[in-house]
Each structure stands twice: as C-alpha cells, then as structure tokens.
Picture 1 (cartoon, rainbow, N blue to C red):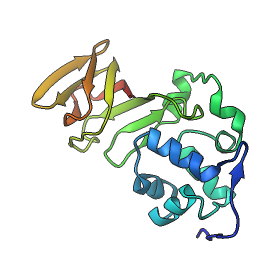
Picture 2: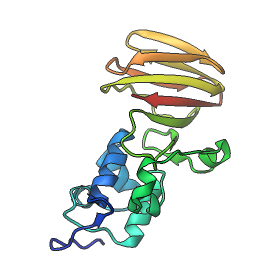
Picture 3: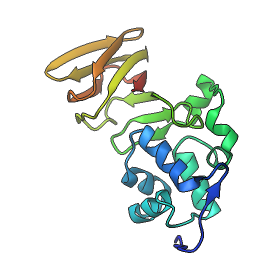
Length: 191
C-alpha cells in the first residue's frame, strides 16, 4: 500500500514534478485514472494523488506506472527524454502490448516524447476478445490497417477495412470496431 507524503514533493528536472508527467502521459493516451489504477494495483484515489503531486509513489509503484504508460522509470524522471526523437521497432511494439479493459491490446508509441500534438497507438484486436462498444471524444482520429480485416462504425455508417485501408474522422462521432478476421492489427492516431 502506498503512503501519502504531504510534506515532500517529487520535483524532477526543470521543475516538472513526476506526478505532472504521469498525468500528461495518461491524458495524452486518453486513458482513465481507473484503468491505470487497475493495471498497476493501486487505488484510483492514489493515482490521482500521485498525479496531483500530493503523494510520492514508491519506486516499485513508479516502475509499474511507467510500464503501464509504455515508458520507463527514466522516461518519467529524466528531463532530456521529454524532447528527443523516439524510434520504436515493430517487434518492440508487439512485445509490449497491454490488454485494456475493453479487450484490445495496445501499445502507445512515443510515450517518452512529451507534450506531443498527437498520440499514435498500435492496436491488436482479436475476434471474441473485444467487448462491443462505441465511444466518442474530442479530436480527430486516423486509422490505418496493417494486417487483417475489421468493421469500423463511425456515426451511422459502417466501413469494412482491410490491410492497407485507412479512415480519418471526427472523433466526436460515436465510433467502434469489430474484428472480422481472427486478428486485426492497426495504427490509430489520436489528434
């Protein structure tokens, strides 16, 4: 269990506190406090306190949080990592996929690059694992299918996409995917 430390702060390089960095990463990936809390075994309240710099996470908790956000502990702690070029191999992305509460497997590209204008993700969706749902949020999305086939609904329109196909849309429209092949791999860029 994490201890709250009201008298200490976790200021890391250039006056950016580690909690602030965690929050920036989580929100840029459009992930919820609950999702991060569930994935790393902490309470939603504790994650909120960490993000608001009201509690300092243990090193073990920081390692878990960094991993869930697709970065390393040094990615959270070192200022230099906040403005560098990020290269990720396809193998690395596939090896570090994280299963979400909705059944997708995701990898957030460029997690160590902070304050970015877009958030690219690698998604792998398997037939029978994805919980059917639709969502909407601010911004725009670009989807590019790498492998497999899927049905994507945007608003009232359904699109069947296969490898090499893409779709760009206003994310305020309700949208969701259904794998048509056993597995579909695609890039989804949130702007």
